Image (tube, rainbow, N blue to C red):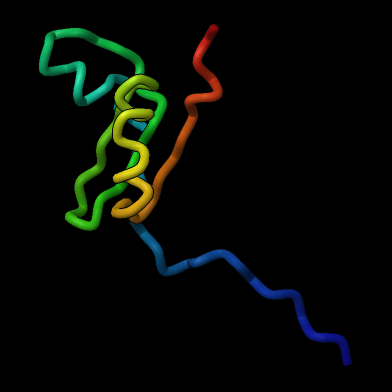
Length: 78
């Protein structure tokens, strides 16, 4: 008999990286409201959001430590 298809959905996972925040966490300290394009879930359980500039700056470190990393920098308008 043929093997049944493998279900790749992790039905037990309840947490996902949040993209609900629309503004860069790093720019928020300056009072600026800059759209976020990079989102990450950290091992501490916190989620961070960064604009394309800060996302590029921190991307290397985020790749090392983030549990989930979502990079939408390709959506930045030229």
